[in-house]
Each structure stands twice: as structure tokens, then as C-alpha cells.
Image (tube, rainbow, N blue to C red; front, side):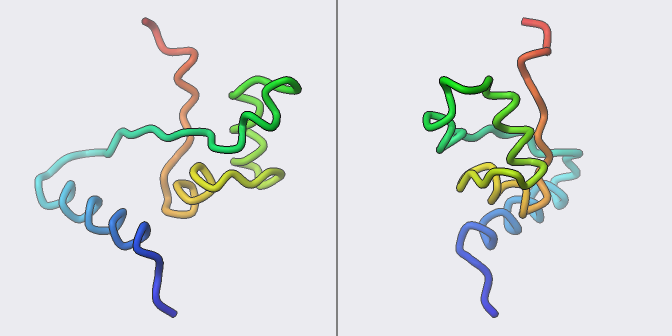
Amino acid sequence: MVGSLGSALMKIRKEACLKKGLRRIIGGGRLYKYCLYADKMSPHKYAKLVVSKNLVDPVLSFQLKNKQVYQDTSKLPS
């Protein structure tokens, strides 16, 4: 089965980083369906539910499927 274009692009990006000797890729994305839950929970809670596969979010679920890791940035110093 052929993978998606998005997965192919993620693979190329990872290979380019490895070739350049970079240690990691840092990126972000939209919590696409969070607006449906915003009145019920925080963005962090929503993301944790997506990470635990209790909810599906098209963007975050795709990123997790492609071995990206969720990092709560709300706790980082400004």
C-alpha cells in the first residue's frame, strides 16, 4: 500500500535533517478540531486525549502517526 503524500514529505524532511546532522525537528501544528471542545477542556487536555487515542484530530493524529512527539509548550519559560 502506498503511503500518503504527507507521510512521504515527513520522511524526506527527516532524511534531510539526518543528512545535515541535525538532532531533531521542532514544529507545531493546529489543533484542528479543538474548537469543538474549547468550552469543555483546555488545549493541553484535548491534546492528551488525542495522544492517548481517545480523540482523533486530523493534524495531531497524523503527526503522532509519523513518530512526532507531543510537547506541551505552555510550561516553557517565556
